[in-house]
Every structure is written in C-alpha cells, then in structure tokens.
View 1: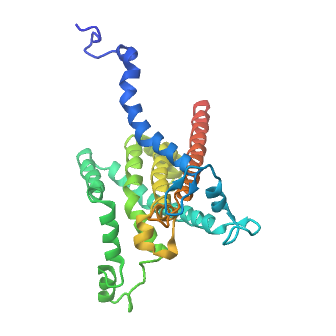
View 2: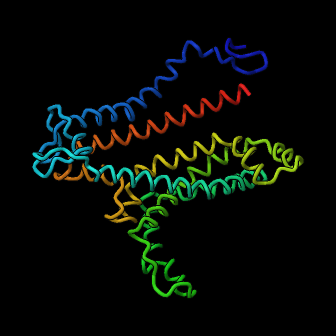
Amino acid sequence: MAGGAAPGGGVKADVYRSARRWLLLPSWLVLTVVVVAPLCIMLVYSFLTKEFRGGVEWSFSLEAYDQFFFNRGLFGDEPASIEWTYIGIYGRSILQASIAMIISLLIGFPTAYYIATRAPHVRATWVFLITIPYWVNLLIRTVSMKFLLRDEGPLNAFLLWTGVIDDPLKIVNTNIAVQLGLFYSYLPFMVLPIYAAIEQYDHRLSEAAADLYASRWTTLRRIILPAVRPGVIAGCILVFIPSLGSFLAPDLLGGARNYMIGSLIEDQFKGQAGNWPFGAAASMILLSMVLLVLIVVARRQTKNNKAEVKS
C-alpha cells in the first residue's frame, strides 16, 4: 500500500501537509496577477495627475479625490463646496442596486424553494433552465431586452393588440427599464445560492412546526428563513455588488438621465477627454464601499453564528 493511502482505501489529509504551500501556489499567482496587481495599479493611478491629452502624469496629487467630493468652480479658484453630482450618482446607483436585489429576492426565493422541493431528477432540469441565459453574452441579452421594451417592440405590440393599453408604454430610458435589465441580468445569482441552502434544509422541521399548529407564515419566518439565511445573504451580495457597478443596463436601457457608477467610471477611460485618475479614484471609492458592506455582513454573520452556538 502506498504511504499516503489509508487502510480503508481513503487518503489521509495530512499526507499533503508538506506540499500545501506548493499546491496553493497556482491560485496565489492567479489572484496576484488578475486581482491584486490591477487593484494596486488602480490605487496608484488614483493619486496621479491627469495628462491633458489623456493618460496620466507621474506626479502625486489628491486632485481626483478632491474633484469627487468638492466643487471649486470652473477654474478651481472658488471656495470649496460639496460636489453633490457624483454623490448623487452613487446614491442613485445604491438605490437601483438595492431595488434590483429586493426584486430578485422576492422572485428568486420562491423559485429556488420550488426547485429545491422537486424530485432530484427534476431539480437538475430546472437548474439547467436557470443557467440557459448565461449561454449568451450579457451585451446581447441587454440589447435584446431593449428590443423587447422599446415603443415598437413585442411587449407594446402585444399590449396594444390585446387592448390593455391605447398608446405604447415609454419604458426604455427610464428607471423601470434599468431595474428590469439588472433584474434580468442577475436573477440566477440570487436563485442558485438560495436553492443550494434550501436543498440542505431539513424539511422535517417544517413538518414539526405544522404539528405544533404554526401557520405557514410563522414557519417561513421562524424556521425556514433562519435556516437558509446564509444562502439568502450570499444571493443578496451576488446581486447587489454587480448591480452597483453595472454599466450595460444603465447605458443601453436607462439613457443619460439614469447615469450610474459603472457608466461614470467607464467614461473616464474613453478617449482623450477621459480622466484616468478620477476614474481610478471613483473605482477606489466604489471598492471601499463594497468592502465596507462585506465587512459589516461578515461581522453580523459571525455574531449570529456565535449566538446560535451559545443557545
């Protein structure tokens, strides 16, 4: 028998202890190249000076952050005042991402519960159907959504044909179109984690609650939701964060009046009129916000887990 094989045919975990660092080396290299290095470049660029014809000058400056938070007039010689333009864009983006997350949760949770309570061979089919939209590029899906929602699109044509409306609905270039685009783009990110959590749920707990005359609402609120909370939290994070930085749905469906963070950052890196340091600073501010949210959620989750262990 080989030295690493257990008598029962299994392999002892500690056989690889001496090689753990080498086994992790590829992962660390990938994370360093595709995550850490771009973040460091973005951080450095946020403290550089804008070059007149695009790009940057390698001189340290806080101008990008100052431009984000303060308004000093057209020529920069006026007393500083709060720059509400960019703060408003961030606030609108947070609101849009939060609404998209809530809509996805309201629709994703029942969907995930339905799938997780089917027979095992049927569940695989439903999960397969949920992932089908991801076979197509996000840009193509968003353009298709715009085609469906436009004034002369199939949705308005159907509503006019059925007599539900007399005039076409103006959906494109509104907040509703952005919400539909975000919801459509990220709904599977909500369904799949919740499905995984509900699949592990012990349904005998619901039966016990019913035997004790608990209503369905009480069972959902006091038994099911606490048990599947990690999946719900994971789904909310997976929808909220990409929605916050999304720029395809706001650009194609929302128009200029529904500007969001992703569009603001993208514009800073377009052509000679862009402002790379300001785009990098806006990205770092967005990253800080996301990290803050994740830290708060992680701390609350840890606190709840400790409370459950003690009880």
